[in-house]
Image (cartoon, rainbow, N blue to C red):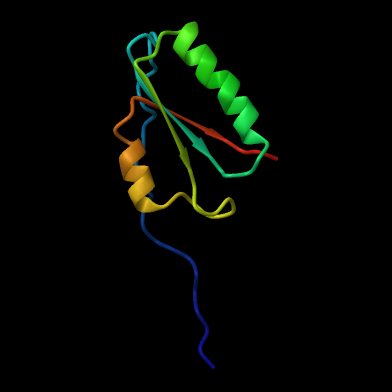
Length: 91
């Protein structure tokens, strides 16, 4: 019998939040959906607000391949180029 010890003696990496945006005008934004139907109407309305009220530069919409799993690494890398990423769950 082999007993595994799940404890970890190391220190977690120190993380800090991204700087707060002062304004949204001219900002590149991404909307990341979990892929369920309920998020589409929310993101339709949010995209309209972002473009008309807050004058963002671009809005990219993306959907994860599996709603119950983390976003794919390539998708995360692509969206990381945006200044703001908003995620939504369609439940």
